[in-house]
Length: 205
Ligand code: URA
Image 1 (tube, protein in one colour):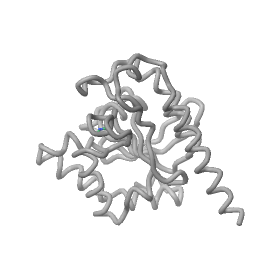
Image 2 (tube, rainbow, N blue to C red; image 1 turned 90 degrees about the horizontal axis):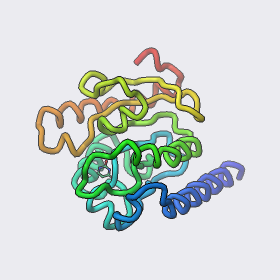
Image 3 (cartoon, protein in one colour; image 1 turned 90 degrees about the vertical axis):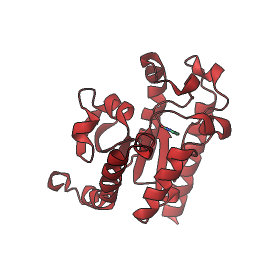
Image 4 (cartoon, rainbow, N blue to C red; image 1 turned 135 degrees about the vertical axis):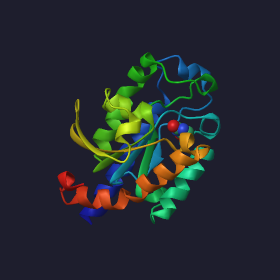
């Protein structure tokens, strides 16, 4: 009974936060995008995926990772026996940058409090960064070519200690066979990584 009411509370909290994000006008992008894309998924998921920013499809429908990169992500989730129901997924930016250009630092800064609120509210056991933008936001001096497939621990302001797993972005791996194979291999390790994180054995990874 208690568990049920906790679940309901988490769901309501997540819906409330999404409503607030949808009203954001902290940077210019809210005026150029069609839909703000807060993120979605299981509000008590153990894993939170963080991508870069909504693309054209996501902007159109207001949901994260629904285009080609999202389909590839879904394929990889099903390879490991997971689905969107097991995870929460969001982006660094909640609004699409025009013509999918790279996020500007002021846009990332304006959107950062929302991401912190999402992490603080979900309290995921594991944050999975997708691509270099998400990685560099938490670990500014790390290169994705060096640390993909690594588990990293970091201190996030206002959150505290957080465990991360670093992956290439599915969009960058779609057309590059070498990256695609690397991403799939890294992805397949995710259940084992989660299991060790659950047991508090991060140093054994
Ligand atoms: N790429 C991202 O980083 N996020 C999306 O939601 C879609 C594509």
